Length: 303
Image 1 (spheres, rainbow, N blue to C red):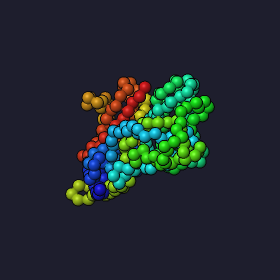
Image 2: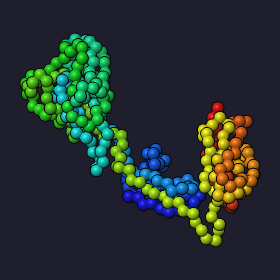
Image 3: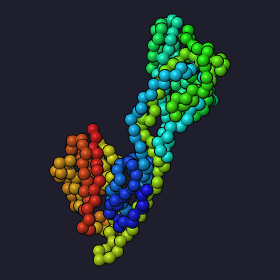
Image 4: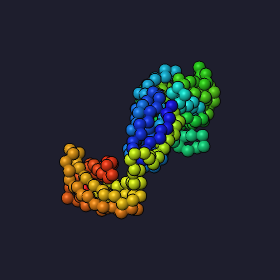
């Protein structure tokens, strides 16, 4: 799906992935880019990125017209699939009720170990009505959907045949009152296929080497800005193999130079304090030039 590359220190790498909709992540799993190609920032050390193929699709609403049960009914869920990938969940949007009296009803979704995963209370009027639930149901077995408190809801005691399949999302396997009963909820509205399905992340290694040749190897081994974001005061940290003349320039989003300075930096760790408290909040670009090379960092100033 994607191959690693080797670059010289301080260079960027262009990574390429093959897939429907690749998403790029850093080593910690945080997204950094999307699309078939990703250009890294300048790198000074070997770095690992990750890429996954993400299939995002709009929700599909399916109204199940068969009579299927609710209270005290174990719900055997099947994992959704997107090709070879697994979708995280489905959503029970609503169900139809037939009430003998107007009252508050509380619907609870309980998992196989007795933990209540979702609950919704609403005033249910006399007669036929639809109750909104919006219960996330993750793949699993033996869920119980139950009514707590006032019931007085219509149920059926004949013509019941388990299991009832809700597409490929779930199977309704029975009722605690017996196999000839189904209780309370009809015409389930289930949201399936919404959200994103992602393949396993594939590591992509960018190896950084000290390149030799006509030009002398770059002495820079580290360039960092912290804290970032900041309130107008931050530090620029450098690590140099040998002494060098460094130019720093801070510019706004329009390219206007706000601060520019030059200094001689000794070999080793160098920390330069910057005070831009007189500048307005915003996003700035810090450009460092040394030994004929240019490196940049974004700096966020907050108030």
